[in-house]
Image (cartoon, rainbow, N blue to C red; front, side, top):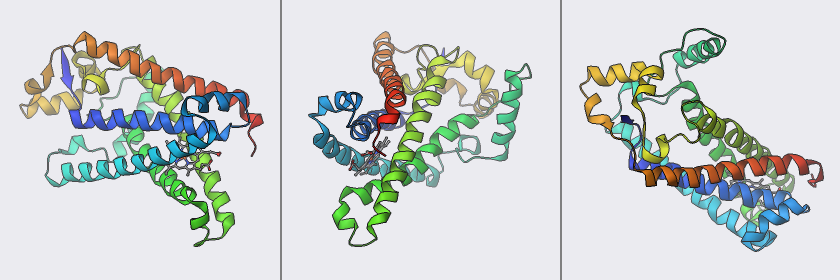
Length: 266
Ligand code: HEM
């Protein structure tokens, strides 16, 4: 038995985020490492260094539009009153408390009783916001550097490129190591967490990890309506293919990036 956690719209947002983030990672790294064989191999499927920039710009704009759509969508959900207090992704004091009790649990303490969103899920959600604001703003500045230089000192473009690079490295490091680690390596997720693919999670696991959410649904009489059967095998196969493909690409970028880091022309 499984319990519905995400709607088709939310799954589509996530799928588009996967596709655009991976494209930006590959084309951005291809340019950053363009003097190395690693960077040239990354850029080859796009037709080389110049084309990577063209793709990076177009997909970057698509990411900004997608982000704006998501903000409008989230505001709409809040304004039409579709969300209850427990559905909120806004960080609260309980998240900090649960973070520390979760650490204690890892050392043998009691497992905290999470609501619908645990602290790491809220962190993942908001990380996209500050990442998009920083990468989007600096990306737009670098989009047409000659035009941008009419409005500001050229040295600010150097700073923008540095901020863009650093935030990109931070975002890739976090997604490829921490986020992928959480959705692939946790005991009940291995080899691929199904929540964002089928839109639902294992009910027994949710009862154990998110008992407050389950209790709230039960009290509101909505639990039964959210229980669903196992996903079709074809969907699970798709999640393995696409999900694990993305994870392998991320690991490849991290390893190649680290090995070649000293060759990047800073
Ligand atoms: C997850 C998102 C993103 C990642 C991982 C990423 C990654 C990178 C990296 C690593 C670079 C450095 C290239 C170099 O050192 O030469 C770069 C440059 C750049 N990025 Fe992004 N980026 C992202 C989002 C965006 C967005 C949203 C835009 C908006 C249009 C954008 C536009 C640019 C531009 C114009 C450059 C300068 C390219 C150049 O001249 O080499 N990026 N990006």
